[in-house]
Length: 227
Image 1 (cartoon, one colour):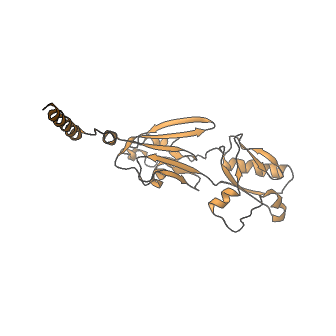
Image 2 (cartoon, rainbow, N blue to C red):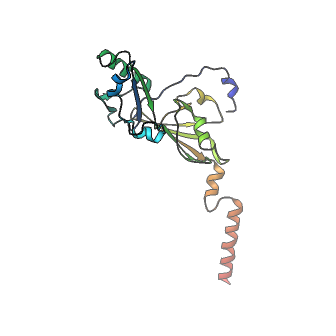
Image 3 (cartoon, helix red, strand yellow):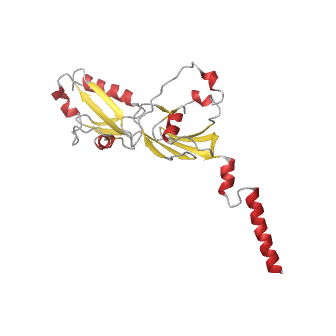
């Protein structure tokens, strides 16, 4: 980000990703009289243990049709809704249909993850619990780019409402700070492409020195055979 100074003191816009198929939601319903909210909470076999893995097992898995099966209320659609918007929808439904009086609804995505591959120190898939993380934070999870990473060409692949979007980010500039790819969204795929020296060294003949060595061996072999 060699021109980052021009983005100093600029406004940051926070964006929340819409709920996607295979997301796991943790939904907690509470009310002034807590006993009245019990039927609307998923019975947990892991009470007292709040690890992410166990919360995922007790969560609501979003179907390919973008629905969940909710206690008492039945099948509910989460299409084109963020977790915050779905929490507001659920609160309104519980209150307006007479289920609960002034309920409190909390919806959290508990299996948010990003995959970072290519020329980074620790490639892999990383889980995160924050609502928003940036591209640089995701690269930080992977230990930063290696010396062979092509900083002018970082590929990001994203599924957005059933549409696959692919973009290339130039980390040597700062224009991407104002793009939709400044914040990583759950299930994003980030690939750091190798730079030219790395690509050349990956082949058998990686540089001029190697080429001359191979050529010398071949020439010597031919001379020995012809003699």
